Figure 1 (cartoon, rainbow, N blue to C red):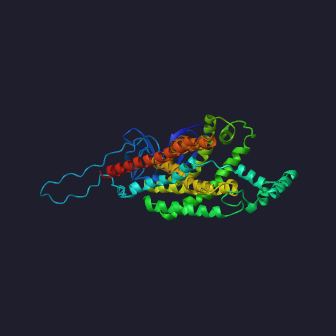
Figure 2 (figure 1 turned 180 degrees about the vertical axis):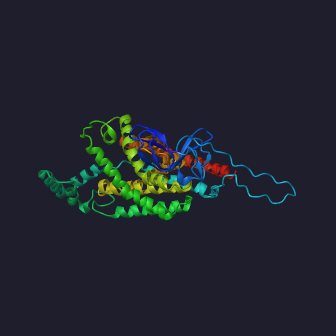
Figure 3 (figure 1 turned 90 degrees about the vertical axis):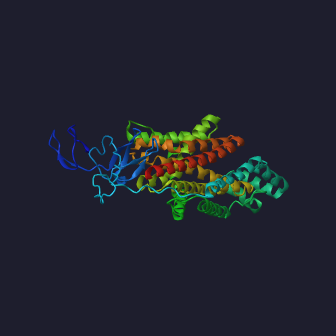
Length: 457
């Protein structure tokens, strides 16, 4: 029964409805529990929402199927509930008449259907790794040096040199003023001019190509193509906005003093720690400190941003199967990667870099973001019962790091290697990221098939 805490200090159990405190007589409205605590054979206790009553859930500890009672029973919301095996019907004697239907056996729920065979898609999805080729080729190509190309332009064009000298003499000129005096508004050899929208076309082509690849190669499970677009657009717009808001808060929270305790003080401290992590990641620090900064700054914030739609789904509906969760994760990572590519193009590439970087950004980097978020979505699917059992904010820390931890570290190692110009480490990390996703997907598929077979048995 639900437990009631009275202001007089008395704690007692009472059935749903209005009841009086045995100590002071004060009336309390007792509501029915909204969760069932179910015991698994391995000893784990599952805190299951009432809406999942009568269904099979996966134990996050041993991955076995656990039958949830079809209705709340005494002890729901409190100690563990001992599951009783479903009695097998008695074998009738030969020649006996039809037996009366059993009324003492708990109702059977329809087990989840076994996953459909994937056929050629089982091997076709490995083709996603081909997206790494532009990144690998770029690491072996000659390094682009925009400043040397600009210096060559100035030496060969005395008129341009005079214009740039005039800008320097004024002292208040901006980068846009520099590109305004350059021929075609770009450094010689740059793929695109400074002020252009062509990179948006690259973004749309990238998004459409990856979306079509997912529809063709990856089994959709019980998700739809419309959901994939919705998830990708959400992460590429609202998710990015939330990420920027968190980065802004982390930057401007450094001077905020923390007084006393409470939830607000802990929240401010966490935001400040994220801000320090960004400083360590982007500042002039060593490899280890920089990687720690990338892990708990960029890695944590970006991977959480990409997994937000899946956290929301498994907290509210939890209807996605493994394949649906995987394609949601891929779509969310694609949306984030494409949006990030647009930002980098307008801020750092247009008018400056050659065309190869656009291919790397809109192909390899998008695919990397996709596999990081898809790997997290698999772990979230496996731990959905644990996530649904979270009731207070501090209970989120353990499942968050269990679900996002590996992707955070891989993301951080890749970014740190690029920052320190250790391209071989970045390439190996990218390959390891794809290998981690493929291995995790195969393992989860086997677990899902075993769960379905156990449910049928």
